[in-house]
Amino acid sequence: MAKKKAAKQDLSAEAQLVRHSPQGDGGRPKAEGPSFEARLARVEEIVERLESGEAGLDESLRLYAEGAELIKACRATLAEAEKRIAKLSETAGGDLKQEPFEPEESEAEQ
Image (tube, rainbow, N blue to C red; front, side, top):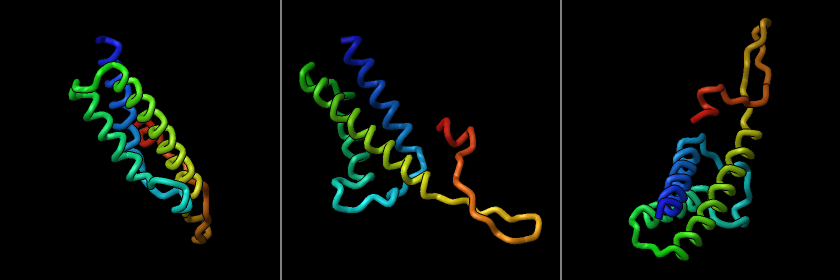
């Protein structure tokens, strides 16, 4: 029972991290499968099911594995989106130059 509770907490924590990350489509073609939002919604459904305590051990393990894969896909989408985001900075001469996006420490930790 303690392992089941720890697994639910781990998945819930991962969902919180992804939920509060900057979102974007990452340039992913629509034909690639469920959208970021659909994957995240499914993770939230899984977390609710696990937290309800109604799922048996086998179902909990299956749900946890599914949730972990969805979290992995969400993180990959977010990483791709971060690569595509460009930051505009003003040079000393007043011109704008494009730089790669690098999240600040406080943003990266959320």
